[in-house]
Length: 489
Image (cartoon, rainbow, N blue to C red):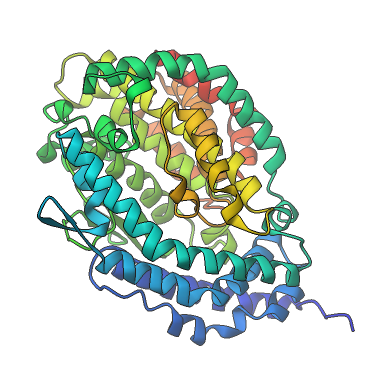
């Protein structure tokens, strides 16, 4: 018997419940990943909103706006693996590692590696991190994958990859663009990556190992240029020149404190949009902290400026490349020579600009390879068969060995990888437009701030492609990222 689609009034009720579900989940995620509690208690939330996550709900919403249908499908799948998500978070928060007689919280191992000058100890820290992940987390990830793999078929899709194509994700077209970016920048990365490793760590790209990468980008020699006590004032001053007083934004909350169980991965939690937006980083020192703070500030201002009149999907769902694009626009100021000259009294701003370009080159190549891998991963029956594919694709892109054990840990759900990839193109092309309209110091122009707030107010309603075309007339293209990198090199 055919399943009746939702009526307009039922869709409105779903939106209201969906907004409340998101609010409660993000509050729980904030409390846990900000280090206030060891457990991630999402199961009671799923139980309270179980009507949103039924298979029938997803099936009936197939004819509704695509973002609502996707939200319902993801809710259905997420509910089936909610215990796995909760257990994985608890394991991450409570696991301890012993290295050289010292004890390290699992979540602090990457931070410890980044701050460790002894290469041998970095290796031991990384080997212990990988051992713990493979022993305690991979079984959870693997079981959750298999549950999702079976459940996706109930959504009338043969696999996760095909489901997201039905949601309108242009995975194959973007994969082709990523292959072109990898081909176009391979020699560039080999040359620039080798130079950076030799300059900073004393050995070349061919000798680099996984435990060296965090230390490379931690770059403690740049701490003097990026002092901790100037970080927040620099953000505040930048926003002020754009016409934003972050201290007077009652809906914005900055969480910059160090906590042992706090996630090392900075994040923004838009608990209520636009009413309550949390910006969270775990400071580790230096340029990393600056980039994390400015990146999350981009997300924060976007959500905090979103119009309250938008639908739930306009506020919270939509194209993630949009909010990631605003985050990248702010983050890249930290290595923008014109911004550095205006905001910080540091020498060699061009060298810092080049450093930022090499860092961007590394991450763009990494995420291009991640997309190619995830397209394969989400079509196979048994993910253990592509462990070696993960290592091969990423090692070839980075010219650095990659741990095959990370084949599931290094995957963000919902093909979020394309949000990052397209955000870099969105940022590169929008930045060119801002410079053409307001000059190289666009970030110090109130008119530019007015335009940004106007664009932020539309939330996630338009796609990055549509927003870029509306503002600049240009088509979103990954090739623009390579052009942006070369400009600094």
